[in-house]
Image (cartoon, rainbow, N blue to C red; front, side, top):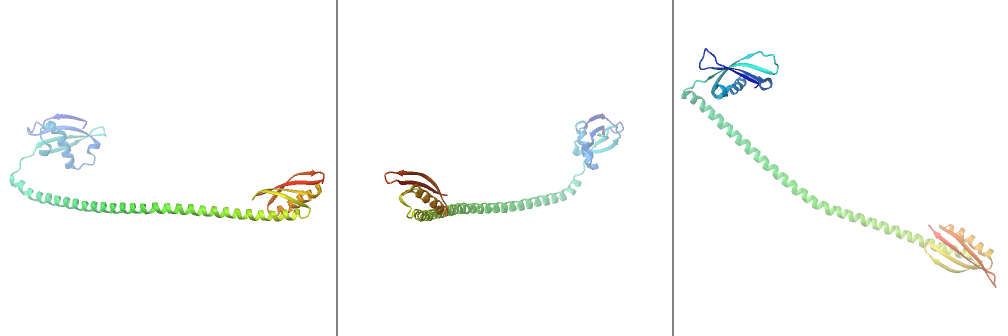
Length: 250
């Protein structure tokens, strides 16, 4: 409501007339009876007539402001009806009320049953989910343990393969040493293993010692060994040549 101006009709002492200005958004879309009731509530504090007991007549009045609606409103108090008239409408109203109560009760009962069913379904699903979790966790742990076992077995197999290859390469090295030394030199010591070996020997001459190292380099390389020649030392009075070599395997 924007503004009210109070006026009384001269022609009817029991009628109350007032011009009412209301915001357009308040009345847009209202039916005639809804608008009459809204106007009755607007003037109730000034007319002294309760909106429920008011008979409302209104006439729209043009106004330059499009945001408001103006009405000339006339309010009179409804005349009391006889008890017989009330009783004529009371029975149907009671029947309608009883039907409405029954419908509301039926709807409430239906909703309660539906809610109960949903609660039971949720409870069952929750229990099933808990059981599944109880199964999933041990299963996941078992899978992890099985994977760890497989990895350990694979590592052990790789280690065994490495050891087997090292043993085989060491055996090949010994054969290569025997072939390289032959009658040209005498093997005095062999230390280390299985992937790093230091060999010492004695040859009659320095030239023979060099020949042994060259032959051993070629023979050992065929089996993955790499030879690093060491010093050759001449010993008197026999003029023998002591020499050593270091071999490594990848």
